[in-house]
Image (cartoon, rainbow, N blue to C red):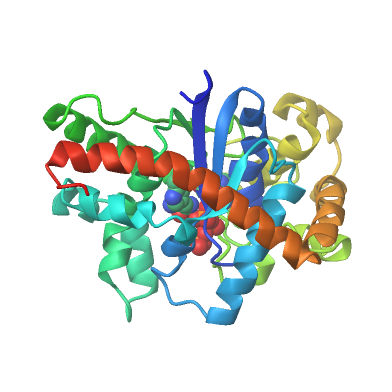
Length: 332
Ligand code: ATP
Ligand code: LTN
């Protein structure tokens, strides 16, 4: 608790251009917690270097991700918005938690298995121990809730296990966090292969709709989305492409699946895909407009980074020094 408010933490990697998966599964939900929780939203650059990054792009995307947080409605006066590497307590606690995390546990993480298959030339120790850093991010702030997409649920469960294990040895150290998945939108799939998650690091840019894509590009990408040989817009098993488009349409319009089925009864996929593209472009237009205003003001963004890092450090240091005291580290 901070000032009688429960605590919310989440993070996004500056590892690529953000997608509507990041938006619907995570960032859009962040602002829902702003009113009733003390929120920390972090740009997790330490996580991003578990796969190789081009330095100039990493730097640019760090600014962009912070600007997008604000453009998506996160007020820096109400939320602590900051960059992970500006608060060294994250990596400090991560080392400690590494010593409380099992090799077997880390070996079971599906993200590690996926990413090590995709980056077979660079299976580094950071990629392997990444969930301990993620646990540190969360536990440093005595976090109660963590809004994330479904792909992060396994990491959250591990964070809970690490915290519980630590608390058994050293009672009352960490709050046990709860994952908060979006009601719909917790898993948005690729437009090219709708059985797989839409991912910002996908090489096929047609499979992915970026938050900053312009209207024509968005509509074109939805027009090309892979569907099936049926013609009826209905949510059913085996219709992964249509199910995904219906989920996206539902998230952007607030309509239920039943309402969408009725709306497009007797109409073909072409009309439906155009409607999804338009709904998405309409919803993103105000975000893009705010983003363009914010991103051009680098001094403002840097001032916000500094303010966020100072605020976050204050709370992070409290937990870190408690942990070190409990472990028996000499503090001077
Ligand atoms: P990468 O491709 O680099 O692994 P990513 O697109 O998975 O990146 P992250 O930075 O790892 O993005 O994720 C940020 C947040 O967005 C997380 O909470 C994650 O669960 C959520 N998220 C990412 N992709 C999707 C998706 N396709 N559907 C719903 N939520 C998603
Ligand atoms: N692992 C997450 C990003 C992330 C995160 C976090 C999310 C790092 N630290 C803490 C929630 C809480 C990802 O790859 N999407």
